[in-house]
Image 1 (cartoon, helix red, strand yellow):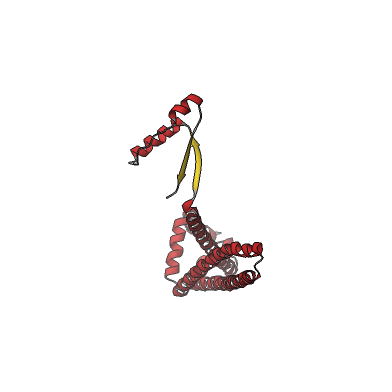
Image 2: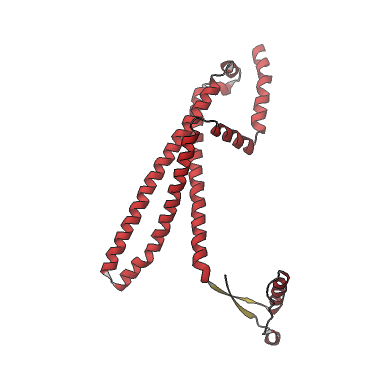
Length: 237
């Protein structure tokens, strides 16, 4: 009982510190551990190659979407030569995407392996420090079979980190490609909207305050008489 009573106060501050530590301190700790890891260069190389593969995959998806129009145009015109040509184009695009997907899966698994290797080396280094076994023996129920807990925690951390990182990268590249395609497609887009005369005056006043060209409503008299609305046509430049 005396040994347990003396060990409990020592373990309480460590538990309090682990509870009080937030996301950013933990992220900083993991970043420092990654930069000091012996597998740092391998992880950085895998991350760079994986980024390139994800970008190429997104570009292949854009090419596949652009392929739909000439393919269906060839079907509509019943042009068999163009039809078989588009089938060949589809085969090249689909084959390239297949190779990229297989390569991406391999890179993700290798990233998991290297992350786990670096984490295992760091855990072993901390495990073999002096007085570590004595402190674990005094930690209570949480220190029962610590090797199994370390094995499962290391596996979960590395697998979830790799999968989450790849998914975030894919989402970012997808959003960037989607926005760029929409921006290019909508360069000559013309839109129509209706504004009341009062709203048109406020909009013109705001444009003048911002230093834009002066504008006026040429239909104000007609709008006042019949209570209609002004039709504006604009385009994005």
